[in-house]
Image (cartoon, rainbow, N blue to C red; front, side):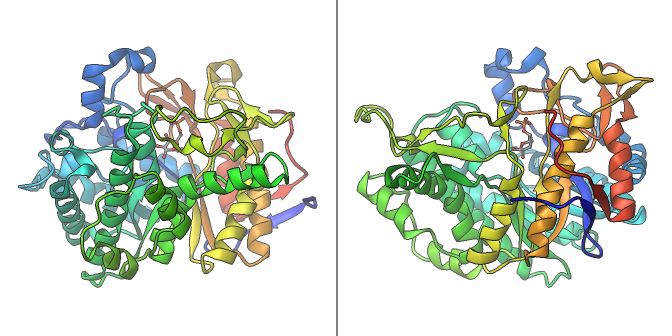
Length: 472
Ligand code: BGP
């Protein structure tokens, strides 16, 4: 698709902002936060964490939020997504709510509101309390009940301060990481258990939506999904079929039940055929059907390219989505070598059009998009990181997003990952994503060139698009 150089103006009241999560940015603080699955993971596999950095301090938002909220203003934020830490609210996952945690989050949300920044709040971002993990995590219905109670308490305590709520961030990631691909605790490889975790999360999200509705709040609630358009290597029917499978397992598995209230029939059929169905109790599917989301957050980082399998599957190997396709590396692709992700900006357009055409054009926004780069000190000039590549990355994606909006896609905003450099799962502080650089030793924050760009972008509600940036 050819995009014309021109000033790209975004709809009125467009949400410009960024996102991060509790575990990645707050630090432990002094409210008596309970341990999470990341502490468990750290105890068991310390050498998996880049440069041995755990989540004790991270970007210290707990202590620095007033000055950080000023930095949001200096970088053009009119909205910002935090997550609430379940383990801070309920150190044991359930039981007594922690009064100090309520005070802390009310202060943060109050300060955001007072400074004219709309608070977006996510309720679960990969951070299961240890006590809940020890009970079996999402495999145990008691944990589901504790999560819904935690959400209910959040709606009650913070409902007057939150602009948009989200039940989960990228719920497919703990499924893949924790139960199939060995990058999140509990590092299990077992599809049937993964399917149970996935099903229970979908149900938990619907139950949280139901609880939200009972509070009669003025806000909306949704879910945030990491969506990757699945592209076949070629139009060969075998490649096309492979891409359909990838789409089913990674996108539609959560998108369909969240937005349409039902799992895709083809997915259910495959799981039945391979005896991988989760346990579903009476009434569960009805709760999912009746409590679909009111807004969709789309995290977009990379496309998924696949081809038909060349080799036969070993029937004794663990059942995996990859039984139905192989990854395909497209020659000449643009690539971020630090994170190992392809850069394909047009994917954001394809996703938005898919949501418009196949998901009722539900209200949506880009809830994450961004570029993590290692050793950014290389780019410091006159004390500032000159991250033109990040500005180029943002502009390219926004140009395609603008095109999607001009074709009727119901997209209300764009949030970058992330605000100040923060901690990443396993990569810790290796790749930096922020508009603001963090000196880990001193916790000093310095606005990058992209932070200045972002301020102007938000001020002008658009930017002068001069053609695609190509120097990645
Ligand atoms: C998303 C997560 C974020 C963030 C981001 C960058 O999947 O929602 O929490 O971490 O990806 O990825 P990473 O930190 O793995 O480089």
